[in-house]
Length: 362
Ligand SMILES: Nc1nc2c(ncn2[C@@H]2O[C@H](COP(=O)(O)OP(=O)(O)OP(=O)(O)O)[C@@H](O)[C@H]2O)c(=O)[nH]1
Ligand SMILES: [Mg+2]
Image (cartoon, rainbow, N blue to C red; front, side, top):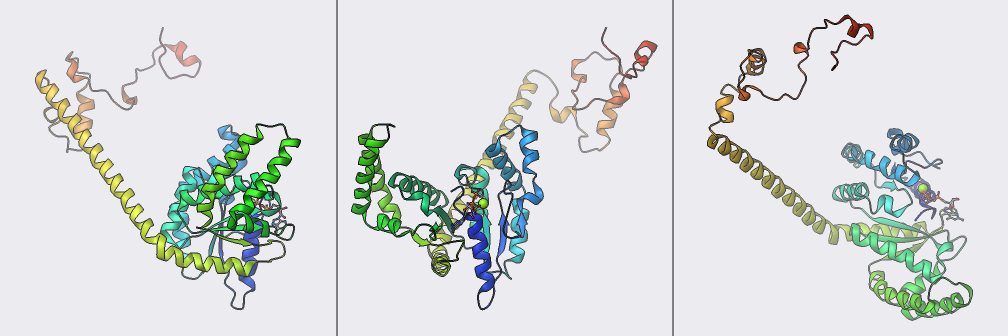
C-alpha cells in the first residue's frame, strides 16, 4: 500500500536485526526505482542499474508507467541478482525486498510475479503486507485494504503477515476485533453506513451496504489464513511479535508451501517443454509440406538445391555464381543482407556532388 511505511519498516527491521544480542544484518534489495530518500543503504538497488527518469523520458511514460517499465527492465536481469543473493545466503539470515507502493506495479505485473516466484523457489519466503493503520479506520477502507491483501495472498500463495504499521498514531485493536468478530464488523459497517447516508451523496447507501456485507462474508474465510501484528516503524514497537510471526511463517513455508511450489514449478516446466515440442513438430511438418509442394511442382528441393550446405564456402560460391546472366527464376535466392560488393559504381558526377555514394532513382 502506497505510503503505508514500507521503506521505514525495512529500516526498522534493519536496525532491529543489528541491535539483537548476536547481530544478524539483513541483505536488503530495493526494487523501487522512484524512491528519492532511503534511510538505509541497500545491498542491491534497482536505481544503480535503471535510471527511472530516463526511462520515463525515452518511453514517453508517466510516473507509474515509468516505475513499471523500469521494474520490467530490471527483471530481465533478475537471474543475476538472484545469483548474487544465493551466494550471500550462507552468511545472512534474512533477505528483505522493499517494493514500489502501487499494488498494480508489483503484485499484478509480470515482473512482480517473476521476482516473487524466483525468490520463493530459492528461499523460504514470507509476504509482509504493510498497512497504514491510521488511514484504515473506516470500515469501507479497511475492507478495500483487506481485499487487496486477499488478492496478493491468493496470487502469491505464500505465507502472509498483515503488518498494521504506525501504531504510535493509531492502535490496531479495532482491526483485530473486526477480523475476529464478524458481528462487530457488521455493526461498524451499519453505523458508518448510516452516517454516510446523511453526509455523502455518492451512490446508493443500501447497495453499498449490501455489497460490503457480502464481501465481508468472503473475507471472513480469508482472515483465518493470516497473522496480524501491530508495529510502529518509528518507535520500534511490535518488532518482537513481528519476528515471531516470521519464524512461524518460515515453518509454514517448509511444511505447506514448498511442496506445492515445487509441484507448480514442475507443472510449469513440463507445460513449457510440451509447448516447445509442439512448436518443433509443427515447424517440421511445415518444412515437409514445403518440400512436398516443390517436388509436385517439379522444382528442386532444398536438399537438391543446396547439396553442399555443410560446406562453409557454399555461400561464397553462390554469390560468385550469381549474375552470370541466366534468367532462370530459381537462380534468384533472396538475401537477408545487401551485398555491398555488387553496388553499382558511381559514374554520374552529379551524384557525388552531395557526398552521396548511392545511385538514386530517376
Ligand atoms: N507516525 C509514523 N509515521 C510513519 C511510520 N512509518 C512510516 N511513517 C511515515 O510515513 C511516511 C511514508 O513512509 P515510507 O516508508 O516512505 O512509506 P512507503 O510505503 O515506503 O511509501 P512508498 O514507497 O512511496 O509507497 C513517511 O513520512 C514516514 O515517516 C510509523 O510507524 N509511524
Ligand atoms: Mg517506499
